[in-house]
Length: 109
Image (cartoon, rainbow, N blue to C red; front, side, top):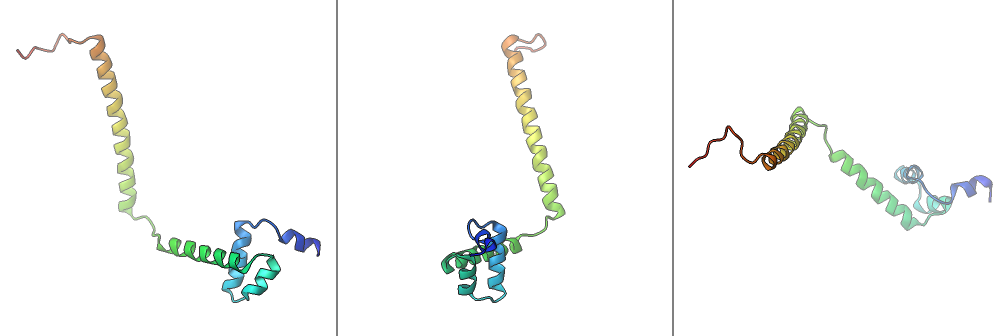
């Protein structure tokens, strides 16, 4: 076996798997590609199915709309305000513990 053939066998990166699947999608024979790469036909079929499923999922995605971007901005703002409120609430509780009766507060009796 040539040195190049030895290098081609072994661990398959995502790129090498995609290249093998593309060969199949272009019409090359499954058994031929399987023998050349030293991978079972079943494994190649699994790669092809995963490749096609990923492609389908990516085709379903859509570009974000201005409304999506505004929604993200507003959610970030809500997060900021929630954190600020929690910090202010903690400061107020600390002040009340240290000085439970503020002089400007009037009793409601």
